[in-house]
Length: 179
Image (cartoon, rainbow, N blue to C red; front, side):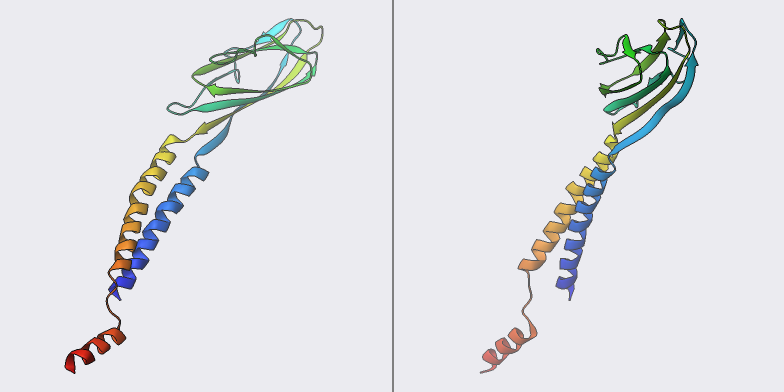
């Protein structure tokens, strides 16, 4: 009965290690909406860079990406993003909608909006999401995989090769010794 319990314990540890690792992979990627703002820009005016909703500092200790969406009603505007890895986002003219991704994103980003060409106001809706990798979740998953799975495998394999003789085999062996 003890050997059967060892097999069960080995399989349970192996399954737990694999399940925790796979669960950490599922929850490793996080996406948060970090800016969701709407504002009106008067003709010949600008909005940003350090006004409400026009800057963001990325998550520290992880690799992240910024996903932005801008919707403009009224006169078109010029948009500029300042920060690391944002080469194509300088003085971009937006008449209706713009979606952009900054990948990889790192450190501080500022966003400038300007209604410099028009004679009417522009209503701007700006949304920014940050997708990042939770490194600590991955580390915990790797630790569980590297400790529980091998321990469970060793316990299971050792219990398979140390099978005690069954009651029938013991009886047959005792009968042979008695004759």
